[in-house]
Length: 207
Picture (cartoon, rainbow, N blue to C red):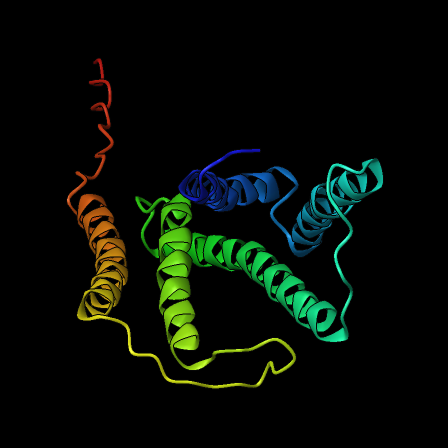
């Protein structure tokens, strides 16, 4: 398939961008409790198995793709990548659970606060931290065929460092917007006029 690399990047961004809102809503529809979150993880695992296991096997068995050359190092580090992806998926699910619980606790003191606000915060924070870590690891880890523990410091250009600083600024702004949303909801609740019950006067006594 003649598909440009940036096309796959866009598709990956669209997929991961939809991931957190879908998990957030799916877990809440399943009950929002710990057992529901485990069910959400199970559903994610089934999807991974179908897409990441069955689909590649069908391509190899049908001959559309050649079988790769197997190596212990390649298999081990590929499994490490799978573990990192699975742990990340699990952490996203439990982050949504913990964030919703925190939002509900905040709503007790501030009834105007919407716990679903956290749905907009989780993904920007995760995907803001991830590229920074990726850049730092890639700048010092330079594995070679048969030598996975080869390290060679490669300093990115100044534009890359500026991009990292901008990402950090984005994370800060996301957290700041969360605080401002909480403060606005708190002020809205505080300025809401109290409802005064009107008691009709007692009927006048007749002589």
